Image 1: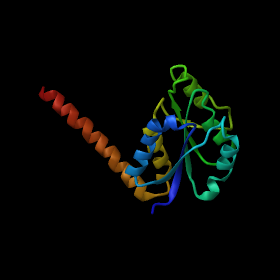
Image 2 (image 1 turned 30 degrees about the horizontal axis):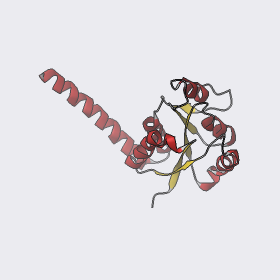
Image 3 (image 1 turned 45 degrees about the horizontal axis):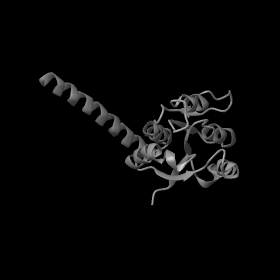
Image 4 (image 1 turned 30 degrees about the vertical axis):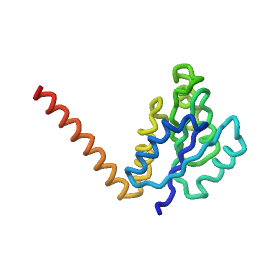
Length: 164
């Protein structure tokens, strides 16, 4: 069984369709993860306990997705010593996703949250793996292979375009 290094959390189960893309990328790089719902507004005690203890449980990176006011990533970053990657989610009550983007992106000095694109959980998974790869050559090799595959896909598409 893989060691759990990344924690993927979200404010609501309605965020799961977006956040599962982070899990898919971590699976691709063979990085162990856990996934849970931690609401900044509805379960503040759980948020505080999670953020205070994730590092002592062996977690190295937190990926936090949130829509609307999107306080989850920032609150986790305020409490936890771990790097937090925020995924703004366009939710049913959002202002076209901009409220989520700005809530996660515009953190005060001293409380950084790495922020990916709106609904960009795939990139959050890749970024978490890249952070871990700084000290793990097997993850780094998988990321290098993945980037090579991306390059080859573009070259193939360009060649196919020229044939038309």
